[in-house]
Image 1 (tube, rainbow, N blue to C red):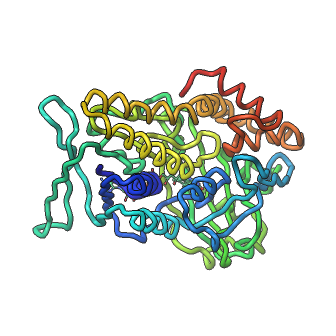
Image 2 (cartoon, protein in one colour):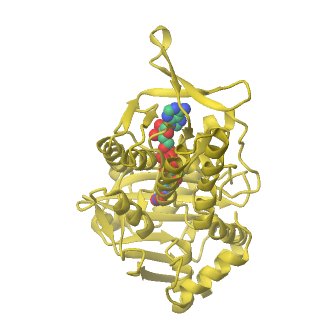
Image 3 (cartoon, rainbow, N blue to C red):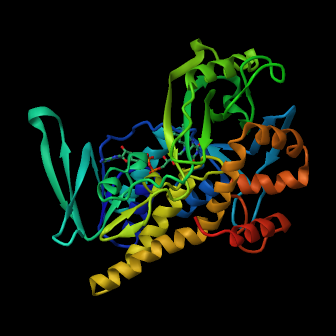
Length: 414
Ligand SMILES: Cc1cc2nc3c(=O)[nH]c(=O)nc-3n(C[C@H](O)[C@H](O)[C@H](O)COP(=O)(O)OP(=O)(O)OC[C@H]3O[C@@H](n4cnc5c(N)ncnc54)[C@H](O)[C@@H]3O)c2cc1C
């Protein structure tokens, strides 16, 4: 199998495939370690996926939960210890996380090819994908490469070049967010809580203008924090905000002792899009499978894409292993359809709820009411916390788990 893109989705699929004894070639245009614009936050769902992969996270920065600031409230919501999820989250700079993941996939037996950009699919006379072409190097030194494979995976992130080339364009009715982040050295770097600011003000909080969007401060350890903000739209047309200006206005109003000043900034403020709610479908057809951001697997509730990417890689590998034993192409295709079924069983109803959620919160007045009156209600927020972080039990659990399970079943799958 050929996997294009060695981010969390590609590395996870490669690791599991290699473990299952499949031959897997993982190709990336970058050379690792490489950076990726991200908040670097890992919820318990992501921690769980990493533990299933057997990644050693013992030295990584852990956090106790989410501290939510907004509507005059400042409340801490600890990650609950649950049957299916651990009671802690983590944060790890993507420069390190993704490097760890590709090395892990290699150790499991996957072959990694770095510095190769895959530009186009190779198709058979009937349109079926049978490989891909790529290039290495530049100018007159450009080397052209060709790969043949029974299955090609586009795990190339938001650009989804191969999926787009195959006509799997982004659905216009799925939410899309844009977010920007940078790093600061700060005394908050070694604190225990991932902080989320639901209101951004251009002056004194409560007495100035409310800006659209939400902000985060995620401690990474060693005196470093990832600080960012984003906004979400319920359609493919993402909101076009002056992120730099809003970021400057927001951080200027945060306590001076946190140190969010240019002298402490580590690297530029960089932004990227977050495709959500299965915004490219089908996930499998005619020899091409899509995963991670290329398939729009980011959660509309919180912008989390690492956990779904890792889970999708796991499900993709399992499906491929069972498809491979089918002697006919028809049987192979039928078995591969199970990948979309499995992912939608896990996330389909949940993401449909998320689409409703985004439609509500993109109206600032509703967002304001929710933060002001919802946040102080402990029981309600226990449920909301689980909902926003994909932290609910799929089976059993307490009353809030059961309410979410019920809600995800009454909506059509995303
Ligand atoms: C500002 C911001 C903040 C975020 N914060 C969080 C967060 O805190 N927690 C969280 O869980 N998620 C967060 N996300 C989402 C998360 O970053 C993504 O969902 C996640 O990286 C998806 O993983 P992936 O493997 O699908 O794609 P990527 O991580 O984008 O990896 C894709 C890989 O494919 C390679 N590639 C692309 N095209 C080609 C090609 N043509 N040929 C060869 N290689 C190619 C790239 O070099 C890259 O290595 C955030 C996103 C943004 C933009």
